[in-house]
Length: 49
Image 1 (tube, rainbow, N blue to C red):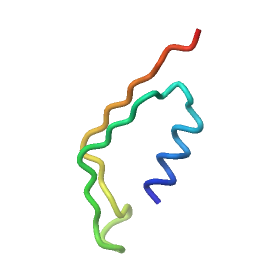
Image 2 (tube, one colour):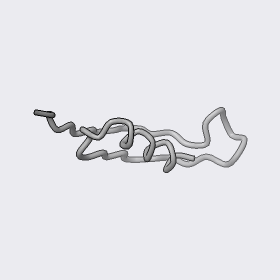
Image 3 (tube, helix red, strand yellow):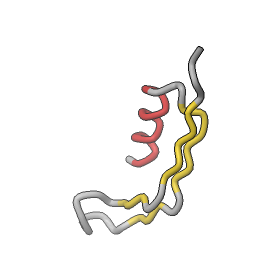
Image 4 (cartoon, rainbow, N blue to C red):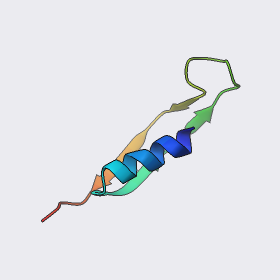
């Protein structure tokens, strides 16, 4: 699920040149509404000319 969502994000925004998600915490299925948490994210965007 997370990999699909990240793939959709970078496909929708081709100006994203780098994406760093660290750490990603995985929870057991049914633990919460989401099965994972992303604590910190860094997105590098290239300017389109």
